[in-house]
Amino acid sequence: MPPSIPLTGRHLAAGLALAVAAASGARAQEGPRLHLMGRVVPALSWAGPMPGGGDRAEVRLTQPVAMLDGRAAFLRWRATLDLEGLTIPGGELTPGAWGEGFIDRRHPHTYAHELMLWAAARPAGARGPEASLALGKGFVPFGSPDPMVRPFLRYPVNHHWAQLLERAQVAGAVRFGAVVAEASAFNGDEPERPGEWPNLRRFGDSWAGRLTASPRAGLELQVSHARVRSPEHRPGAGRDMFKWSVSGRWEGQVAGLGAYAFAEWARSTEAGGAFRYPSVLAELALTRRSARLAWRGERTERPEEERLFGDPFRSVRPHLDDNVLGQTRWVLHTVALSLRARRGPLGGEPFIEVTLGRVGQAQPGLFDPVSFYRRTAVRTLSLGARLDLGGPMTRMGRYGVLDAHDAAEGVHRHHHPRQEVGP
Image (cartoon, rainbow, N blue to C red; front, side, top):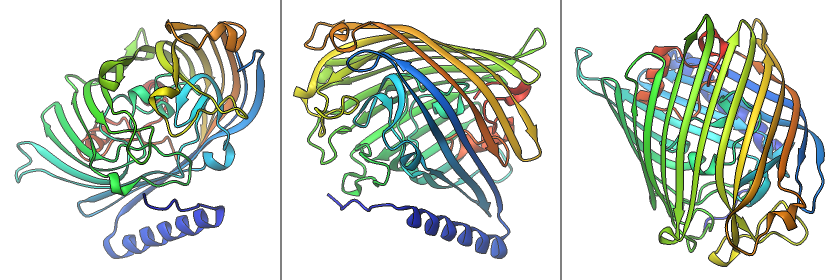
């Protein structure tokens, strides 16, 4: 296993300076176009139930992200820096969250969230299929849009069932009219801490494929499948995961209001089907001028794992079969109200977000949510503001011909496309 490289603030500053210098040099020599975007979300969150019972409130600086998009000649690149390892090293309060060793807290993403380079080509005469090839570290062509570019602060429980991110990959795509076919080979292991890089010895041990169709303006449908080798055990001795995702996304106008609708079904299975984790989720939003009202409903099952003795928000790693103590089902409803304002390159979006729901046993097991949480009712309240710099952020994970399609359709916007709504 390659050694982990510790990442400090000085490393980040030096790396960012080198990236800017390299991009500036390329610009002087080849005339590329650059677009720098950034955002951060200061928020107060009050949530429960917590392990052992009761509620908890925290003030955190979440989603501190800087994204640099650029192009030169036929090449495009994207570098996304995520500083959650510095601002939320212990995670963000999110009852129901699961993944990368965190439970009931959303894990911080890695500092190098995206480092992707790609090229796209079309036959002479601008007719026929368009193809692209992408490589680097980023989102695998699987599942639905990243929750960070959807209308809620709270990540859904199904984040690790419906997305595959921060992997070293080679991905190819071909576009035939309104249909895009993608395939990718990548490393199966998930990061265990923000400064960790993919285990390149495992590169190519996993694969994913996705079909995306845009039959009409504003409508997007996708179906995807992936085989992920030992995601929870970095050396590769853990269980393999097979994943399916089907989703549809629409944005347009309803009675003069900006409208957004999204629905997805996802399922992950492990150990030859012995463990099955289904999820169904829907989102709706309406926007009038700068005000937006959004709703999300979710029904997702997750594993309950053995937790660390000194930290009930973390699970035992490496993840093995005997860590699973049961399976719970989370049924949650979230409502968010926000008001967006912009002055030049600066944008602000104060919001209030409430989640209510329940947690229960999905299958008999050693884990009893009533005994562990002291109650089954889930409730969270978040107050904060999304602060943007340099314009709305690009949809993450869209490389090659999908990125070109987004640019043509004008959906390189965050939260409020068209009448200011939707991812």
